[in-house]
Amino acid sequence: MKTVDTYNFKNLCALIRVDFNVPLDKQTFEVKDDTRILGALRTINKVLQDGGSVILMSHLGRPKGGPEEKYSLMHLVSTISKALNKPVKFVNDCIGEEVKQAASSLKPGEVLLLENLRFHAEEEKGDEAFAKQLAELGDLFVNDAFGTAHRAHASTAIIAKFFPAEKKMFGLLMASELENADKAIHEPAKPFTAIIGGAKVSDKILIIERLLGRADNIIIGGGMAYTFFKAMGGNIGNSLCEEDRLDNAIQLIKKAEEKKVNILLPADSITASSFSNDATRGKCASMSISTGNMGLDIGPKAIEDFRAVILQSKTILWNGPMGVFEFSNFQTGTKAVAEAVAEATLKGAYSLVGGGDSVSAINKYNLADKVSYVSTGGGALLEYFEGKELPGVAAIMKK
Picture 1: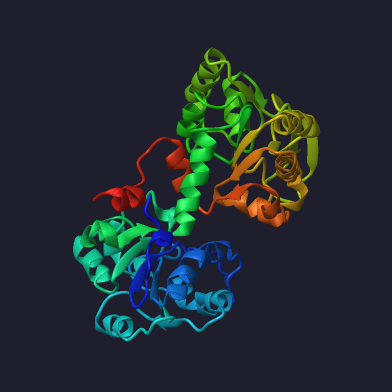
Picture 2: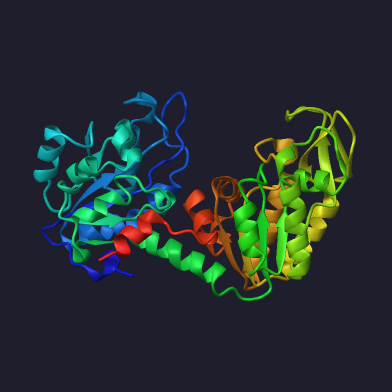
């Protein structure tokens, strides 16, 4: 795998695709979580220390049909400048004469941030002409955006066609993401426990199927657990359920039994009378939730069961929360799992946390430095675990 570590960027301009799709405050537009920006610093600083210049390109949010102020990368300039400890130049487009001029006038040690790539529909369409215009801005192409590696967009995959093999490479964050994902999926120390949460079974079917051939334990929590309980004949009240996935849930349970994989569902749930932090709360067996109530968190018995398995594990993958942890009254399960993963890591387990909500949780409880690796990629990490080719990775590997 060719990375920026193997190259000298002296007097060269590196065009770096980063994933700066970060959350912004809706009123002030200030960056609320700079994890992804900090993750790209090693790559950027390597180029600058060599005596090269840097052009950063990224998307932000999902703008519709053109520029929208709330999605402008201009809002990131001060955060990036502070992280790099140097001024960052900004240009309010990513193609065109003004951009060309700004790029060509960059001096060694300088950094230029382009405007949101998705202000142009051609980006998501993977348009070759658009990719070519981007490619003309730099001497080399560096892909350090693992979070978008599963997209065949102009700036993530198509652009690589316009650079010879020796002038396209991975950034250090991308390389680290792939190395850590491989460690968990290809060579896990046993027992290997996967913790899968979130709202929908449909989002996680493929990864659970893939894990059935690798994991010793699969812990299932969050809203998706209630589809399994309904499929098993349980009463789930008003809990979240994908009626069209009941057969899938049963099939996953059967496959797990055949492969002797231990699937753990939450024995009990913390229920609510409505989807609200202030709703009337209760506790009951997850198979016996009364009409009018819904499960919003795992209960104390489930926490005890999950914790015991996590602490016995040598490899842990965590993707998805155990409940609606954004509500303070329904965060106990997610927090307990986060703490158990951290404790297992302290005892020598390898832990990989990936997926937006899991990362938000691990950061919320100040445990990011207590696990082995926190991935910046949600969908990309899932697709990599599912065994799919990531276009952003394949494009760099091709000669």
